[in-house]
Image (cartoon, rainbow over all chains, first blue to last red):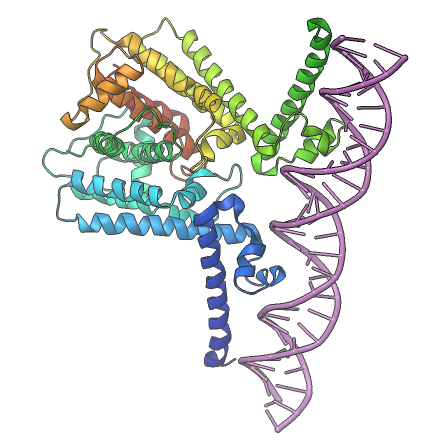
Length: 229
Length: 229
DNA sequence: ACACCAACGAGAGCAGCGCTCTGCAACGAC
DNA sequence: GTCGTTGCAGAGCGCTGCTCTCGTTGGTGT
């Protein structure tokens, strides 16, 4: 099998696959995942519904592709904004990550709902999803790791019963700072998206008016909770 | 119109309405909201699909009723468990509320996904939903309010820029403790459900093994964040 | 150069969905 | 007893995800 010749076929396939995914993402952003219809997606591309199944075996697979893309998009934003604040102190960098995630969520609410809103109860997420979903967490981990040892950085308290777990987690994540910190980091990672999710789903409506200031304050407190100063 | 005679009609109507909702809840708990089908629900009751529309004008209305019920079920659990810990200190009571919510979520994952998973992007939630959704938050607020003034209870720090907002929020909620506390409480309320949501959606899989101990630790730290000791 | 085969896309069709409309039966009000 | 409201069944509309079949076409091995 000649590589160049098959390359043409394969390239066409990749292009069509990407075109489908792009159109699907367009409709997702416009209407939300519930309204996303395979027939409408391929109709826009001048194809017929059955042809789509040559590229995505099911609607779920197409959605999974969108989930991975969304996680990567969010992750890239967080990484980029953190990198832009590389020179600043750890708290600034921490806040930069949070605000990147929050802004991304407010800009792409349907994508955010797709990846954080609808958990797959029972059914475990496929591996590539899991990997992509970890990116923001890894950025946060990097910020805390870099701050480790800096003057003023403190260790959050940790109950004795959780110490073995903390040691194991730190080892699994190859996380240098003391095990106290890794537990706090994982918890705060989850709490951070609780904040974003509540704001996005309208639970702050009529309650919190100054969203920006409130967010800044809350995330500063979360930075404190992982020991950053 | 005689009240007794119409009472019979009305009672029958209420019963059928409740039967539909119960069967719908059964299927929701079993399969999740996506799989919930009006035809299947009413078929189980020996009715035909079109008859359902005499009771719920649309699938969305039926789901909304389930959302309200789920919120109230979660709220009742939280209230009951908190009441059972009424004698204990504020931290104990705080933890009781959290663990009630967490247990409820783990027991009813599809209901939890229905009310916290799928936000209504754009479209604001109807008022009764909003009211029911506030119950857990109100319980948490009660715990903090009761602890206010107790020895050792501290005020979380608050930046100057957020003080007016904090004062307004405390006034809106008729919350006696200092405004520092109300901001922390709202933030922590959201963060708490971030923890539950992450655990439920499997994001702790392969990362946190000792879920119970980890939860206890995290929620203790959240209690500290609102000033409880 | 040719024959072959895998990939492709169109079309028809299936079962299911939410929802509407129509017609009929039963019940309550007067 | 008559009449109007209410409840339910059935047919049906347009849509969905998905499957199967069938020509066509383009790259491959000889």
